[in-house]
Every structure is written in structure tokens, then in C-alpha cells.
Image (spheres, rainbow, N blue to C red):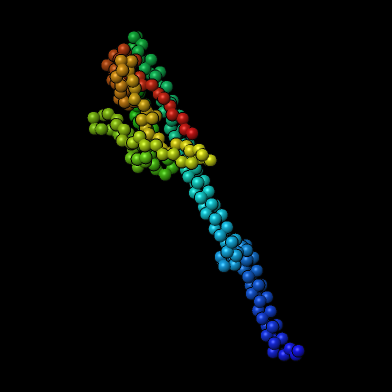
Length: 228
């Protein structure tokens, strides 16, 4: 059987074309460091790659959320630590004001310091995170947690809703916190109650008018929340 020169030439040409295509594919794979350039090259591998890409994206999103949560917790911890120090100082001033040797002017001086500390606490209650969201407004992160109602009383403007985020396998952590969980209402021995800042205002007023008995009862209890 004779093999024509034309057949041999065509076969050599096809072989060279195939090799050139393979070379071009290899070069393209090397240039992008990928074995599969298009789904048609290896459908099974392409599907597996897509699944892995989706999982990587989910993990990256999860990692970013946890990073934001960590920054938020650190901001909360800073605010709570400062608030705790202020409450300790307020208690010290309350004990000092109850000293019977003090005169009215002395107690007014103490009351002025207590008022300044009370305002600092209110400011800490309206602390924000790195994104400008309020820490203690629940899910109303764009609304200040506490505000003045116009008559000198601090009112809570957030909500009580708590959201949680995943922090591992079958584990979640709290992401938003209500201001009333931190600055809790004060329950009196007689069963009556008052808001945290209302109790502070009552104590300051009692100090200013030298009502030492009332001032000792008005001091709110500080229940510091801990972050996860």
C-alpha cells in the first residue's frame, strides 16, 4: 500500500498543529498558575474548583465578620472599663458626702464632681465602634443609646434586640448589646425602681441639698457586662 506524499504532509501538519496547541495551553497554564483554564477543559475538576472557591469566599466573609466583632468587643471593653472606674469614684464621693462634718458648700463641690462624672458615663453609654455604630443601642446602631428628654433626664433610645454571629462549629456569640443590659435599672429595698441615670441624678440632688440619708440610698448598683 502506497502512502502518498500529501497524506504524510497532512499528518505531519496536524501533528505539528496539535503540539502547538498543547504548547500554547501549557504556556497559558504556566502564566496563570492554573491547570484548568476553562470548564470545558476538565468539567469535574472545574466543578470542584468552583465549590472550593465558594467555600473560600464563605470563610473570608466569616473571618471579616469575626474581625469586626473583635474590634467591637475591644471598644466595648474599653468603654466598660472606663465606666467601671467612674462608678467606683462615684461611690467614693457618695461615702465622702455622707460625712456629717461636711458643710453645704463642701457637698455642693462634691455634687459638681459627681455631675461631671455622670455626664462622662452618659458619653460612654453612647460610645461607637470603628464603623461609627453605637455600641449599646441594640440593633439601632445608628441611634445614640442615651439622650436627654429635654428635662434633664437620660432616656434609652435603643432597642432590646440581640443579634448573634457564628464563632465556630455550633457556637455563636452576641454581637449587639442593649444599653439597659449595661446601665441597669436600680431596684430599691422597698421594691421601687429607677433608671440607672435617674438614680444617679437623685443621688447628686441629695448630695447638693445635704440629704445624706437619701444620697446613700440613691447610689445605683453597677453590673458590668463582660464581652465574649
